[in-house]
Picture (cartoon, rainbow, N blue to C red):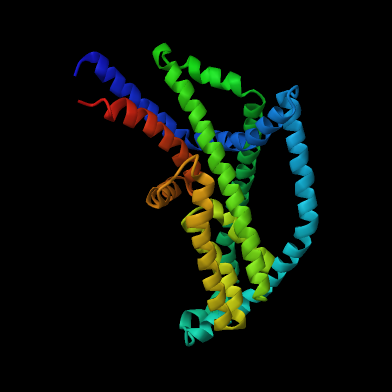
Length: 334
């Protein structure tokens, strides 16, 4: 190994260590890119619809429409959601008792109240208080990161060409045409994935709400909202979302719980094998194994934010691997 290769290897190792130390910064930056692409889709559509409209004005119109629509939706749904959340907190003890009864009186469930009372001592509450303070500090840190993410996203949407030019200027001249194509394809794939998953989540929310309402399951709106939001986390999300309506139905009768389980299985299969493939057929097609492994790996490395951003990252990496690794390296390997 000559001196040049040794320096390149050393620089690569230092760069990898630096990126790992700055992983949360990179995560916020990538989250900002995802949010920027999500905002850029309606902004670009509005600018095509109204030709002389500039980008800042289009962004203001989109944000205003989102704010008005969000407030209107909140007026319709939030009161009922708050009421259903209060009902859920009241149903938790009954749910524990119901599960204990169905399991034949498991000792762990029967003694749950005694175990909780054992923690109600000053010696046990002091560590709990320190944990709550740590949680509050983490929540404040997360709020700051979220605000920075939103600010970065707005700046990216306002002037995407300058940021694209910055990336191109850091690329060797002979590779700039390829990088320009890669940036365009990554943006198209990510925008298509976000649009498709949003429509899929709304579809799951409406169908789940209607199905639970027809079955007369309590907390139908809250359960449907959870199912719709967790659609953005494929494979893991829909399975976890089923637990809430299933547990609530179990309080009424096992037969109702079985009906809810069948309903969720039908809706999951419709979403996974019909709605999502149709919506994403022209943008990106992720294998379930790749999606699950990416969620598990980033979940272990970065926690919940890694799970949330795993799929958008895989969408981008799939485009990069196809254009660079497959077409530029493997296809030319003799």
